[in-house]
Structures are given as C-alpha cells and as structure tokens.
Length: 232
Image 1 (cartoon, rainbow, N blue to C red):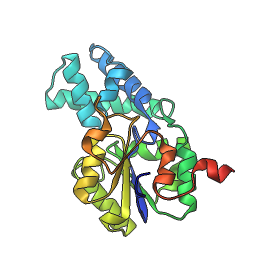
Image 2 (cartoon, rainbow, N blue to C red):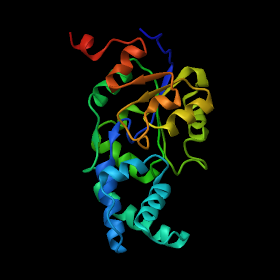
Image 3 (cartoon, rainbow, N blue to C red):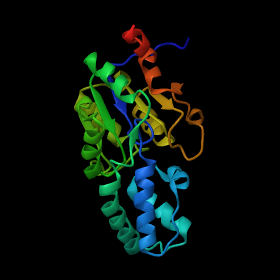
Image 4 (cartoon, helix red, strand yellow):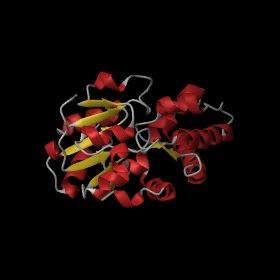
C-alpha cells in the first residue's frame, strides 16, 4: 500500500474533479456558436477544451469552428456563452460518484477545505448550491479572483493564505495537468483523478503524488476510514 498523505487541509478543483460539467458547458457553447452560424462542437470535443477558463475555452471552440479570432469577436462569443451558461450550468452538471458523501466525511473531521477553479466566479456559488455541496468549502477561489489562473500557482497560494496553511500541509486534488502543475509549483502534495478532463492525456503523466480512480478513495489515502467502513 502507498504511504499515506498527511493533510491539515484540502484544496479541490471543480470541473472534472467534483463535477461532470461538460454537458452544461457544451450546450451553452454550441448555442453560442450557432448564433454566429458556426458548427456546434458537441460534448465529447468540448470536454478536451475544459480547464483553462472560459476565455480559453471559447477561443479553442472558435478556432476549431473556423471563426474570427479577433479579440472583439471572441468577446462577443464569450458574452453569448455566459448568457446561455447561466441557464445550462445547473441542469447540465452532476456530481461524480460518491463526491458528496466523501466531502461530508471530510467535513466531519473538521478539516478545512478550499475550492480552486478557473470557472468564471459568478457561476460558482449557484452551481455549488444546486448540487448541495456549498457548505463544505471555507474558501472558494474562482477564475476572476486572481490575475493568473491555474496552472499558475497564484490561486493555490491564495487558498493557503486564507486557510492559514503551509504548502506542505494542504493536499490538492484535481483532474488535469493544470491542477497538478499549480499544486506542484506551490509546493503542495497532490492527487490526480483519472476520470476528468485532461486534454485526452492520462493524469499520471504529470506525476502527482497519488493517482486515484474513484473520489471516495481519497479517504483511505489520507488515513481516514473508507465510506464502507463508516457504513458498517
């Protein structure tokens, strides 16, 4: 068995780690593209564009669709995307298996938890509330809250400061190379989830401290009782 990871606090990515948000993102993006007579990308293709924030996702979509890449046009498409995503975010997102139960078990230990996502900040709170996990996070950092998004370590540093933790004391959990690179640059131990959005690459390539297939496996990785043991 791998050596346990010690943590006094936890940081989590959102899209692809806690939440399968690709359907809602894809629906909003496709409607925005169609408004400009551009082809719809579809959820499978769009899932490979998630991770660097909405502006980059829009640019990737417009580039794929053969559209105008001028800043003015990209902003217009982004505005359309935001308009549609306000309606599709909640209905097009679902928690990955055992996420809510695992977060509840972690919260019961009193361990502080932060959320660090490149998602535009205005969409985060309504999404967390709709999924019933908003109460678990002491700190929530969105893509509009920092000058540099993941993979830059700035949002991880901000989370550490707000939680009052040293880098070695917070384990960061994500699904993409952006998450792992940000955690590594900040000096945090990190866990990579295999099921999320990582540009079609295996998360193991970025060499996180642990690679997990199931979110609930985080509990024994941290030396805590598994969900099965807690139910027994």
